[in-house]
Image 1 (cartoon, rainbow, N blue to C red):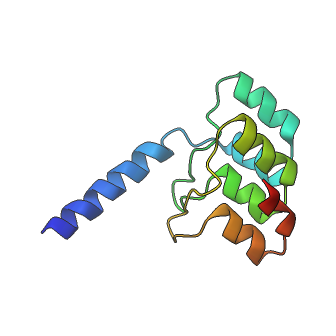
Image 2 (image 1 turned 180 degrees about the vertical axis):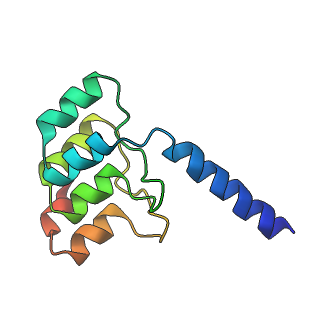
Length: 107
């Protein structure tokens, strides 16, 4: 019974974290558009909210696509976690290395 409660608690936590998910932040991170992220951050958009279905954060998406400037901005300026895990357990740095973006490991 405790394992079911843990699953329910985890699902609630994921839903709560994903409530403020923002497509513009996500799209800007994937596109490598730091300027748009700066504007969105100035408008109060949260920068490290996981996608509701996958748990992937904008930092994860940027790392997967080799967007070093975005990863640097999100981690160094906005305080995003480079070790945040998607729902499948993968991290931004793992995704970057799987996609041949070793430069992202410098962050």
